[in-house]
Length: 151
Image (cartoon, rainbow, N blue to C red; front, side):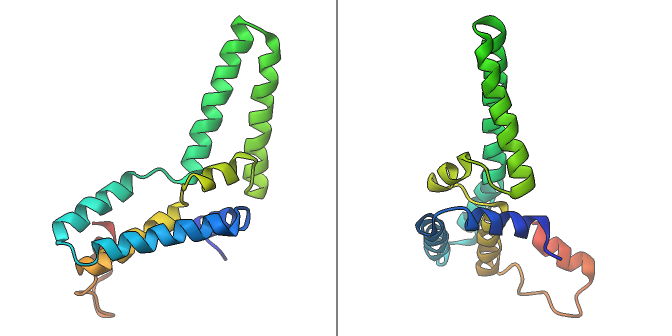
């Protein structure tokens, strides 16, 4: 069974133009290439940045909430027609929850937003370069293995 992150990644990629997916992939490869020969402290700084990077799901959620709240305010204080925008945003969120796609998704993908899994792939590539996994073996304790992923 696919995990939620994998299915979100695949749905985003399936619903975005292939050239936008290729651009996101190339950016990740370029980042890995750039950091490959840098000191561990700079790789650590980049990993910390990646932990703070907003994924496409978060961007969609914040965007939808912002538009919905704004349209409620405008509908309350100016013109009730603004409430239609709230309904449209709710419909987009419902569509995204059911199908994994909504109209703003290709726009945010074109702006370069990545899925959580795509961000995590860069994190783990950088951790590998930094040497985080060199001490792990099949005989390592589960706590030690998990600790190497969580740092």
